[in-house]
Length: 166
Image 1 (cartoon, rainbow, N blue to C red):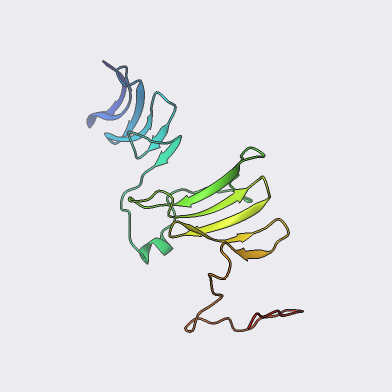
Image 2 (cartoon, one colour):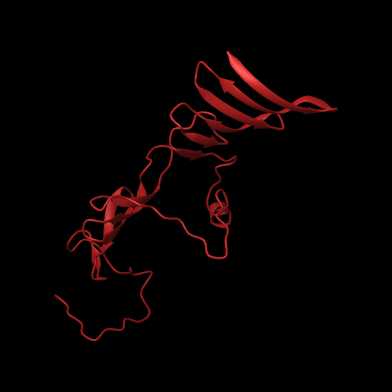
């Protein structure tokens, strides 16, 4: 069964509640008679999601499309005079910020490798470039990528030495 603590006022008998489902071992918090937060038996927390699939699963209303996404990145807000997010992994592991869609959860990412202290960038499912522990920006495949294009060129390149193969 389900145990409930319900909150009401004179206009509505069930506007808010805390429900515990013994069959699913899941707790759901409701406001305005709508499920808002769920905690499942694995400790996964869903905000806007009643069946969270990860430790923190946040689901908002409209998914949106570009360019509206560029001006609407407010689904999660961390506010402080100095704010940050730390991804902490083992010394032989790493940390990843992944960008996915409904077909591929990891189509783009920024990955930090603790083993060699490098950072890699992935687009369209493929690692494209890396910053190594010395600060060098390197392509992830030899002789495969361009810097700029015929329609998007770099204005100036400042260098103390220029080595070219052609």
